[in-house]
Amino acid sequence: MAVTLEQARALDALARHGTFAKAAAALKKQHSAVVYALRTMEAETRLSLLDRSGYRTRLSPTGELVLARCRRLLDEERELDALCEVARSGWEPRLGVVFDGVVDAGPILRVVGELTRARATTSLHVTAEFLGGVEAAFVRGEADLMVSVLPPRALSLSSRAMAPLPARLVAQRGHPLVKRGAAVGDDDLRREVLLVVRGGDPRLRLPTAGLGVQTIVSLNDFHAKKTALVEGLGYGWMPEHLIVKELARGQLVQLAWSGGASSFTYRPRVYRHTGRALGKAGTRIMEALTRPP
Image (cartoon, rainbow, N blue to C red; front, side, top):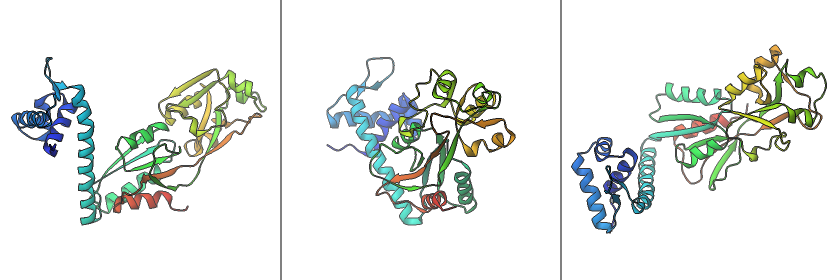
């Protein structure tokens, strides 16, 4: 018994799109071809892969298990296609990059612009996530390169260091922590609202992590966090490159904290899978992001 790629694609398409008609449209095949592929797959495996008891056909529990293996097979097919394309032209057919929103996006966007102007044939997909969400997207296979400030849990990764990113513990100039006019203590910080970005992770080891702050507000991204800080809604850590103007204008002020450090350094790295050769686009991006200043 051997499951064919056509059968694997049909099962994956039905699971993704929910109906035979939509699966056929996604695969650019006739409705009958998808039905036949799945019936043949059930006959050859001697398994009931589909549950036809309801209004809409869906995968059975056994079908879900087989689907997971089929998707591995399809991933291998894509990787083989990509390897052949790189071997022929040097350019990857597709390259995904996921980066942590704490990192300055400027260098990433500049190298993407350079590749576009160089007429690179690689289709580039760049997305921003935050903290733990970066590795989650990378593990799901949505990216080939990952820029992260957290040490990854995934194994078999190669990495190169980027320039460190300083961060400061800040509040608006009219915030009670600033108006004290003196160094604030642990109890002062515990009583005020701490602003954080969703997806916080203990691996980051921020100096305020063990304080036990009473009220913590999680925001979607660092830009929303900066807005909340400028409005005086709380205090929090901010990457220095995102608040240069606000610090210069005096809108935000670095706190003097008697109980710990009010500065912190993120140490981002660019990660890729060990054993997977990068093409021209991946190599250019890796080199641009890790080039000494």
